[in-house]
Length: 568
Image (cartoon, rainbow, N blue to C red; front, side, top):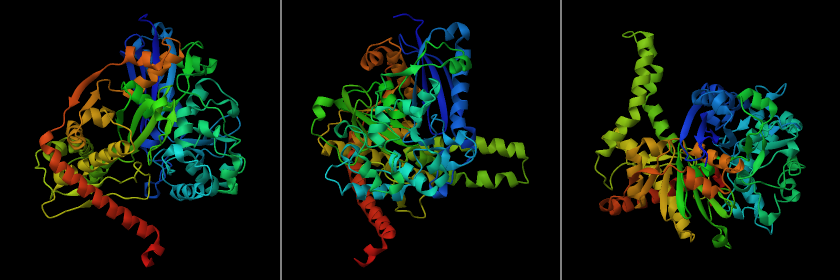
């Protein structure tokens, strides 16, 4: 293997995009660059109180240019650029957008520049809760179970619910949309210079896990399924796709325009896109029946199993099982939690309210000092809470929380559910509440592992990747204790981007298979959290309390949302 074969992995997250240049011979990072989305950072086009979270495609384009060009400059400029052989991309999902006949997102066309409905509908956007519920009810009317490969429950975080919601509320977008495209499919199309929406190569990962595509159905469900759900969907199935492509297949070559922009050659091969956690699982060196947990703002949990061993097996209440969605020849099973790091960030913002809203009014310090103090203390909150919480005794009577602050992804998707904290008293201080929230996120992780096991899918180990896995020993040790299983933390800091780079090495022909790229480019694990067996009993008792409280919260939410149940 030559040391001058380099690849680029591009990882689009919720807040930023990161690109890395990686040596395909050994997986060594040559350069890395991150770009925070400016419109997103400023809160544009989002209404959190209404669960509306939209992102402008220009943020994605600007970030793509900035990070790749910066990486090339860091690595040595033109001399290095000639050695780059492939680019692959992962993104959040389901994060779709309405596009015109050229495949251009409507927000980049005249008249739609500031229309949130013409922008990418971020994975965490839950404006389509009603539509998801209608899809679930509608699916029961058909002899074929079109939800069988998505865990039996369709989520408001997914493609069809979002598409239906936007079509209903915005006629201008409905009339202008030639199709809808996932973020992970659009970026490769952009890089390869695509101009015909019908030519977009749709990834198996996004189509199977979020859009009801299945080999058994010969593609998407039939037109009748959608038209009888709502006539507004008439014709949209035919505007989409029949075929899908795994991420080890090329989307095409870098276009002349993008080659010039980035300073690369048109010989560079661009891979078919996939979701961040799926490529991240590969970057984290996933093994059959080991659960790869990408832990960031939310979690996305990935398990792979040989397709032959999954014949006839369907796992209830997860986010899909799709052949080839992670590694060709294996079934990819996805689960996750809608709020993980977001739960800690929410509590941090609660505590930081005086800093953010009152410090600037201080008559004691000047504005510059106030801003510097705010930034300094904000960065200290979570690390200090973690340190103090780790000193607390673990008792049955401790404060207890439910982690559904952004709904529940799995098991059994329900985005109407809410978080809760109970057992509060006058002695409940910030570290004690923080510990309860951390416990809740770990209990949520246990409920996912338990669901796999109860459905006959063994979980032989846990692999931790992502920001929380790397930054929070407190949470990781607690999770190992609660799961009763060791957790291996992958040593590569930007594991999703590394996974994308591994796929780039395959589409560029450097390695014949994903497994071979993973073996050569994997960087191994640098930390293992072993469970404290002495805590097994108390955490099992705490988990039982969590389960009981969760059932109560779910019942109360159901009652609130369905007043007719009050008289039942």
